[in-house]
Amino acid sequence: MAANVDSSPSPLSSKKENLTPVNSKISELRESRAELLDRIQNLKNDLQSWRSKLDTQVKSYRDELSDLKKTLNVEVDQLRSEFQELRTTLQQQQEDVTVSLKNLGLQDVSGDVKDTEGSKVEGENI
Image (cartoon, rainbow, N blue to C red; front, top):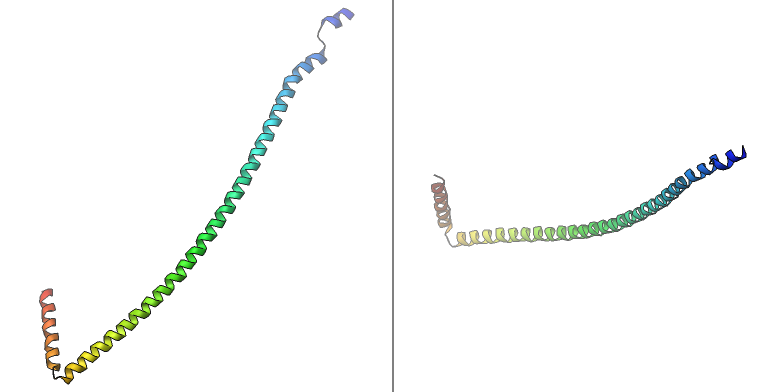
């Protein structure tokens, strides 16, 4: 019986041989898992940094747009004011010319000029 035990492989030694490749695979998988977790953490950090930079850039652009909008509104208000002044000046000049023509006795002439211009416009529409 003792010869049988020595010549046949023991169940313990065959289990150890089978466990060595499994332990090696487990070790490789743990290393791979650690590498993946490290890469994921790096990607998370990169994403957070990218978001922060993007938020900063968006805020900067919004501030710049807000300033441009304010400047544009001020310029539009100035133009409106200038156009209103121009309109008032032109109306005043027109009234002055009308008064001058009346004073010179040319009121009928200005009426004739308006009638002539009206005829031209009517002729163009036909």
